[in-house]
Image (cartoon, rainbow, N blue to C red; front, side, top):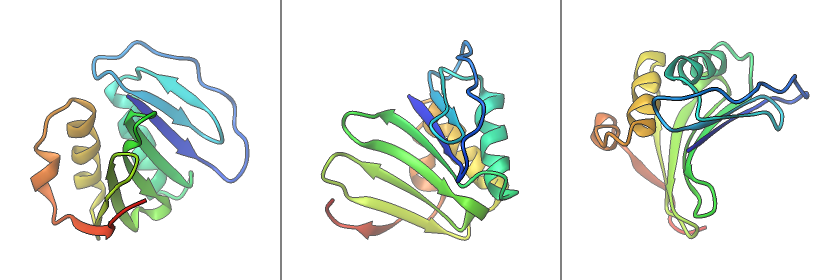
Length: 125
């Protein structure tokens, strides 16, 4: 997996860290952490809600476009199930719920699929 964190301005690259959750994290404009610790994912989600970064994208398969993402301020959360979509979204997700969704997704625990009311945002990419 990979987690990308998007900023409008470039930031310092963070070195890869060993992980228990098998995720790749990017903290900032083109910054990435391969296989981060759970705490790295939680911190990234917190920074989105605090509007310190523009977005967090957690990719379980970059080549096949499988991801979960959270834009600045936690407006809503999205996930995509493949190259052609669809993209689903959930509105008004709390910080605590966003953390649980990201950690569940990172750990291949499918409880994230039923934890919120997902709606089809884009039928096909």
